[in-house]
Picture (cartoon, rainbow, N blue to C red):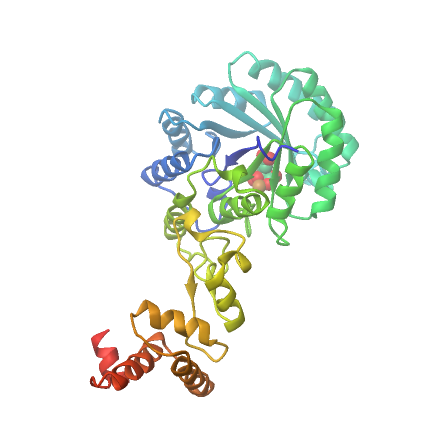
Length: 391
Ligand code: HCA
Ligand code: CU
């Protein structure tokens, strides 16, 4: 298992730029790279310098930022591309080529033997350039595993640093990924990277399975943005690993995750999904009375992620018909109101009746609590309207 020594290759500035809404200005790219570096990812992958003239300038610019993270760029498997990548001053070059019959027949038209010859030239050149080298097979899951192994054994013999499994179409399931990566682990002694798309919602589980099978590097992007519906989300991978053992992700500055998610969401014009791992708006909200009671006694009853470790807070939702008196009592205490358990139970009953009629707000609940408190202490009873005006 590589769980305690894995690295994240953060690809918001490469795969993420392939998200339909993404158009990052140079300033935004610097901002994203800096935040990712502050978060502590080990690598930042940027768009190929051959994609466009500005992409080349951006690649050079990110490479020159002096980040702690290593900067990688991503190029096709040919010598010209590799040379331009090196000229940009990056720390490493991620080379990719399609190996499935779909891509061999309908994209570049090369056989596996031709790919082996091509990669030999490319890595022959790269290994003298003082850069980290990686070779990855696009659409690995729909490639013949023997083709991939043969290809990787050839580059392994050349001394490259890392080989990559790419589930380009998001077709793999965790069991398949585990098997493929385990077999690859037997065949090469390089590091192993996993890049997984999320077309069927398996990208996080697949990345985790890859790590369990011996992968050393996982590709992510902020919010998972990328081609189509994207890849393994940075926050989702962190959540998965934290759930296994918080120590695995203790090396990252976890409270920065919300800033990263918010910033990138704003830049690409989307909201953080309500059900997002860690940063979704309901990720730490408890509702049913039974849950609320237990969480108030001990948050671990219904929380495997501690919100405070991510700079976030939990919220107990009480203004609804599933509420329970323990949660209502807790709210009264937050408001510094002294009410007996009998009074709290009576108010809880009222909340349930009222919310059977219509959706309630917390203001209404607070008003009920305040009125009960003020009523017995001889103070003015607040109407719902005045409570709202004061709020
Ligand atoms: C691409 C394809 C890629 C590459 C992944 C990798 C994929 O858009 O160029 O280099 O490991 O999903 O196959 O993102
Ligand atoms: Cu991809």
